[in-house]
Image (cartoon, one colour):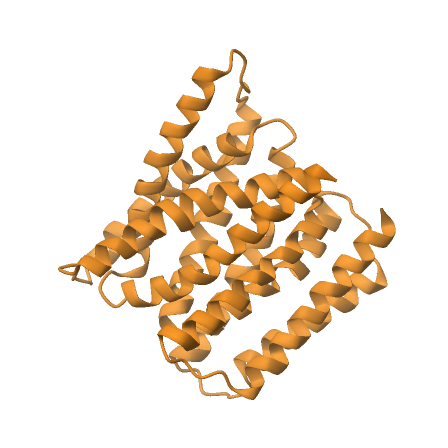
Length: 297
């Protein structure tokens, strides 16, 4: 029970931090291109995480030995999760808005169920299938039925990709946690993500300029690097280590709740009826997943 409680606290804080990240990133993205911002936050995050890892290892006489198989898994986590998914989140948020970014990516728990079936060999039940359909339909409602392929629609589609790839990350983090500590996984996965992001960042800067002559921008970047990357990534991975992936994924929904509220409060974003209907269906889908998982344990 104590382990589940600690895991729940870690996951709640991580998801809530990411909810605020959408609001902060929406502001910062007006001055720094998305892939460049991802790169900068990873540089900051890796420095913080690596320092903490070395301090932690110095206090322990024995620490995890990383095998070649582990390195390959860490590289995959860094690529599909911290590179592809985070880049999709930033680009999608820039093209749409903060509360849409927070809500659409909250469909992640339903996608976790699908990937857990094939990767973790968890049973795919009727209730789990229904949850995926509910959450997917909720996403469609949020995106809307408009056939105008403008930037908002494109941003929403990209955010769906972010939800799918983050679900993959969550499952593979669970796999990696069987042999490695959460801090080790987070640190080196971020390092690989930094490597993958560098070419994209260099390419992006050829077509964009940086406008960071603003104290708030600097503070925003530091927040994204230290709090929403180093801190939240570690908390999420630690929570998944302590809890079952299916149950733990439910806490991801704190992200849209915080993101939507802050988007309305600070960015004056409008929350229309589709947002609440889609949000309800996503919540319902996630609840179905959680109830099913509890019943099978």
